[in-house]
Structure formats: C-alpha cells, structure tokens
Image (tube, one colour):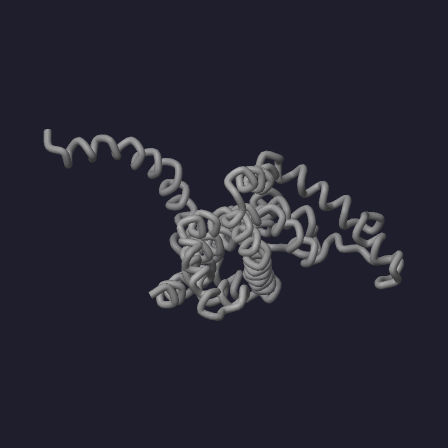
Length: 273
C-alpha cells in the first residue's frame, strides 16, 4: 500500500463524517427550498424577494452583523495587542478572562443582558439618574440591545484570532519604527496593523458568519419587534410549519453571507499583498 493510499484511508472517516453531518443536511435544505406541489419551483424565493417585510429582515441581519463585527474589531484589536505585549503570566490570565465567558451558556448570558438592559436595569436607570433619557426608556427589543449582547458573546473569537497572529509579530519591528521617529499610534497603524491583517480577516469572517446565523441572543434581546433572518426561519419551521419557505430563507441567508464575505476576502488578500 502506497503512502497516498494510507493517507486516504486515514482521511476517509473524517470525510464520511463531514458528508453525513454537513453535506447531507445542506442537500436536503436545497431540495426543500426548490420543492413545490407540482415539482421544482422558485415560488418560495419570489415570495421572499417580493415581500418588503422579509427584505427588511434580510437587510437588518446584514446590517447588525456588520455592526457587531465592527465593534468586535474596535474592542478586540487593542485587547489582543495588550495580551501580546504583556508578560507570559499576565497574558495567561488575560486569555483565561477572555475565554471564561465561553464556558457559560449563551442563554444565561443573554438573560443577564435582559436584566441589565430592561427598563429597570442598570444601564437605563443610570441614564435616567443623569437626566439623559426619559422615564420610559429601555434598551430591550432594540437593535442596540442585539449589538451589545452579540459583541459580548463574539468578542473572544475576534480577540483570540488577532492574538494568534500578533504573537508571531516581532516586537523589534515596532521598536524600529519608534526609533525612526514614529509615535506609538503611528507605529501601530503602519507596522502592527498591516501585519495583523490575517488575524483581523479570520476574526471578522468568524464573527460575521456567527452573528448572521445567531438565533438565541437576537431573538431574546430583539423580541418580535426586531427580527433577524434566523428568527424568521425558526418561526416558519415551528409556528407556520412552512418548511419549504424556511429552507428558501436559509438558502438566501447562506447566499447573502457569501456575497459579503467573498469581496471582503479578496480585498483583504490585496491589502496583505
């Protein structure tokens, strides 16, 4: 038996598991999306694209996913920089603090945000005490609540993705830039940030795809007033039992994510040389 055949035998169980766990459900979803009473049809897609409500849900999903990715990057990049520049012991504790929320259920964390963001919660009460908002102000069932909750949930994925790349950046490059007259921010912008682009791209793709397909946090914090596409799919499956239309929405979500990610990846490759 040749080495190639041995490698194929080693990979085969994993490929079979991937086919059963991923490709078979995807194929079934595609069949349902194009299935009609009298054979293949595009009626489910026409229904979605011809309804302003569902188009608004799709736009809200893409918009919120973009905002969540942006804020995760704004917070995650400095956090990753700090973890990469401190000593090994301090870095270990910082990594533990970043990973620790992942050990708690997303449902529990989301219920915690529901308490904090509700009308009598900490944030609205503090804003009312300073006279910045009205008495009936509440962040619950708003897009802002979804962004806040999802950023807290997905921030570790962004920070750790950037950290993995930053640890391979030689600190002497930044020191050389400082020696040549760059300030701290200029050195970070011209040296560290370009070299960290692969981690930024990986973290952004991960955060965007997870936020676009997330259901629990947007459903609990946004409620029925602020629907995203994953929640709409869930309601079609569990309430109206329209599996074909739900599958069509899932295909549209998948295609929409690809339309956003492919140009982003190409731009990132050009920027990274």
